[in-house]
Length: 219
Figure 1 (cartoon, helix red, strand yellow):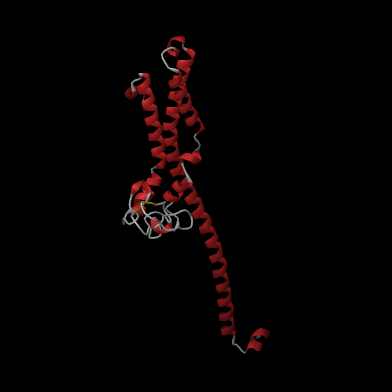
Figure 2 (figure 1 turned 60 degrees about the vertical axis):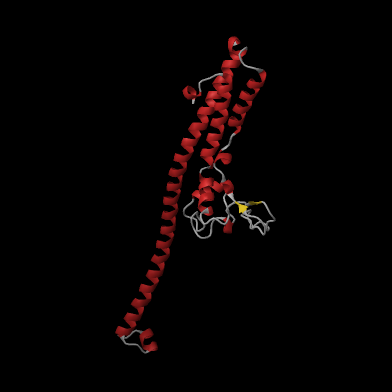
């Protein structure tokens, strides 16, 4: 018995079956394609999040441990100089104030200060404008330039400037015209947490030397 739709379209049974099969196949492809795309996006996000967490935890744990050790050392010294009558007489009021102020700085130090937004942007390799790409560095606003002469207006987003007179310099005093300035500027941002640690380590070392402590033993 012929199908009424088949008769209406003037198709044979085999042609009609083929047409229906093709439609069903296309519909299944569309459905599974959408599902596969959604699952791929979800899986990709999970993998990226896990990788980001692992890397961030490793970086933050090391930096946090070093800053915590410095803070703990200063805290111990404060206790020594404030609770021990003998030790209290060996430190001047100005040095004690410096000790307490430095400890307060470390105590108030936040994650946002150590791991800045610029740091995360510089270390995010999944971004289209990630470091070492053609769109980063001076031309994309990868760091402000200071010039000895007149300079053009800053690019939108607080980026690098060009100069009409003199030579502009970017992060760490590097020339914006340098072919490797974007890479060096990005590396400078990546090293910022380590430079924060070294800055405070230097301050603590200077204070310890002033107070007569052995820096090699304590640091």
